[in-house]
Length: 441
Image (cartoon, rainbow, N blue to C red; front, side, top):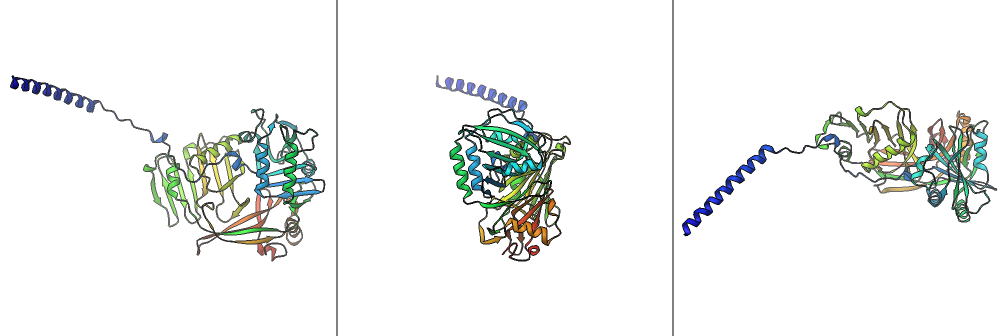
């Protein structure tokens, strides 16, 4: 009986093995692997940090008009304080109030007492403020501004007026802010003015006034060790499949990265990157709101805000937008690349140019206090001691001049005066000033 039982078990095991063999053979014949398209692949790479709209849309100056004159500052702390306070307000419908403002009217709006004016580097669509401020209506007019003016002359205790002025379009839109603690707001403004500089208004015929400080200013200069960003991070972030990217040295200072759809050029000498996706080129004009939002989203996708970059200008015709590097609240200029520039294509970025260095991650090697002459002295110098046509000057501003010492692998950030002419920022160098009377000490 035992042997018969063993034979039955063997038969059952044999049948099971035969069935298993058939099953494995069938599975191999019918197997079809899931192949993912490279075109749809995204790589989650974090280079630095993300930014909100309010981080990249910022004024570079604040001027407060009082009965006894003007006070002004480029310091970010009082400016941030006002915009944080604005988040509590309920801003009513934005409406067109003037289609053709004269320069005299704009000047008058700024110097009327009990007003705070905020100066932006370029026209900003009012709509983008909807992401950070509380508007009662989310349908916005096609309104832009580069001067935002808060007016607390209204009699009610819980409201004030906001003016959105575009000096280039000569248009003004108005909104009323409700649920405002006006007494608290004005007290904070007046408290900030205690540390602000006295400003002078320079009036020229048929031009916007220029606003300049009346006393010298002490600004820190900085020296940093050069901190480069690893180019592999951008390769991994910008290409759909980094494993398929080919790397080719072009020269001692240049290298190219390419796949079948895009090209990334890296210049190690200038510490710059230029990425192009040719197939996405689009020759149709872009909407300003879309250009700002799409570019912000794109850089956020790879956490590409390595420093304090702020919206500085755009050209909707060629779909280009630029973000200026700021340091310690001041714009940075120099021979090094100091802007992030994007051209937006069809549903994605067409071209992306940017620096490959960062100041945020570095620790200053040394600092030094520099005394700059007053803005009034600088304007007087330009009008009397140079061939500059002061009637063409749009603004006089302090910025940082960025230079590089290759022998020491260092960056130097030196405070300097600049004047703005037709959108160009022109440095007034210490050599031109000729000493401590007008400029750097």
